[in-house]
Image (cartoon, rainbow, N blue to C red):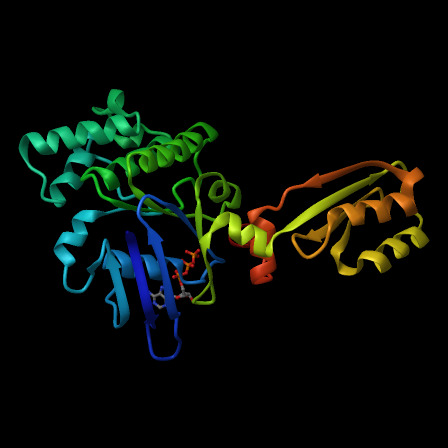
Length: 319
Ligand SMILES: Nc1ncnc2c1ncn2[C@@H]1O[C@H](COP(=O)(O)OP(=O)(O)OP(=O)(O)O)[C@@H](O)[C@H]1O
């Protein structure tokens, strides 16, 4: 069953500019789907339409086959949203924070207490239940934020950049908890700028660029269709200019010199054979080569190929 189904969605904040154009894709139940896109691509707008914070004017959004317009109340209980900006109240204890969010979803009495205990246990904060978040590190606050978002045991959980500014231990913990949510049968939408995180935990990817979906589907398929393998060639000594020219004329723009002694060569998957590239290099530069490494196709190279943009530089530019 599709947990999320989006058909012909268009959206504009004002008449001057369309922010989302004809969005169509679906996410199957019990998948972990990564949303990728540069700043301003339209990810947050799409998420706000899914969770009902923005009003949908054109197209349809269905959650577990229920239309978001006609089944607003049922759908609200099905979705857990973990926002990028922390949605916790500093002068309440961790327990009171999670309880507050549980009560918003209509939980009461014993059921509410059980849900709060379970959510705090899930993020491994049971022993800090009585502490106020003002005493917490950035990573612990993020974990509390997750407990608040999942306290009502939703089927679809949307997490917006949950690992920004957290220590490596909490980051690993958050990534592992997403795998655990999958094991519990949940569907997770994970928005992140960190490609390696998406690559590690997601099986589906949705790439949004300038308000359009460039790709939606299986991650491995995306890498097969658009990824590049990389040959990293390290030379004993710096190459002469003539040798560099020879390499560049052979591999054209697919060769990038990382230094005088190192060149990176893109080998498009499926279209060319990396083995032939190796033979050619060995023939022409054999005595000069110290080492050749072949790295796997990465999500990053597939994203770059598809969008022409590097997501890593997007993070640097925006701090
Ligand atoms: N409330 C708003 N009013 C008008 N325009 C907006 C509003 N919110 C976002 N936009 C514009 O809509 C476009 C999409 O923004 P959105 O925040 O959805 O992108 P994003 O992919 O989530 O980016 P980021 O990764 O920076 O969060 C941008 O051009 C942005 O300036």
